[in-house]
Image 1 (cartoon, rainbow, N blue to C red):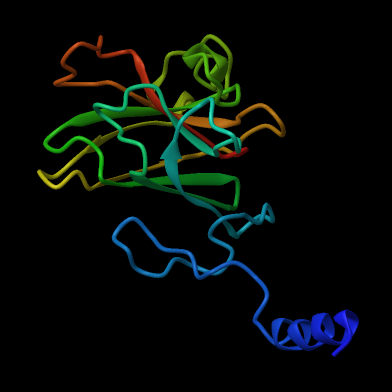
Image 2: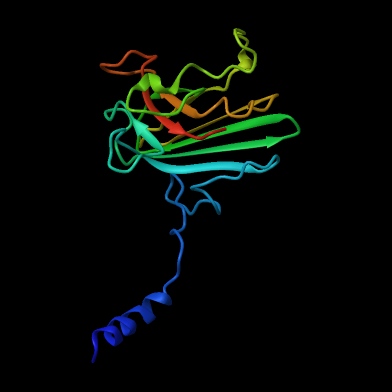
Length: 191
């Protein structure tokens, strides 16, 4: 059989294979919603980022990186869901496989994740310089002994376009060798 015929015979079955990513898995290992690895930005719809924490300096850029693998191990899972409707925004953070019996403060930041923890910039504030509780997205994830946890918050505003890019987990308590405010992990969301 000529080489071109053999190659053609091998390609026909490959063309019948399904194309597309495998079904997304949520932090508890359950299938995530359609489009869980990406997101839609239309008002009234959810934006979902469902991924695993990886190294900041990996071969393939990671969407979620850890700066403290003792608290947020490589391969631990994160899902961030952002809902927008009628001028309000909700943010839900789900974790699996991180440090158990721990409190992680989490905030939306202005910059994107990078190998330097400071790359994520300061906290996003709806009104610059205001310290009121509803001026920022602030939440605390309290994890169970197995390292799973969920937190949600709702604010009476929507993010300004192209000004909020990441969700940062701070080391919190108990933090071992880390200061409570240290940036333990970061997830690129582009709110």
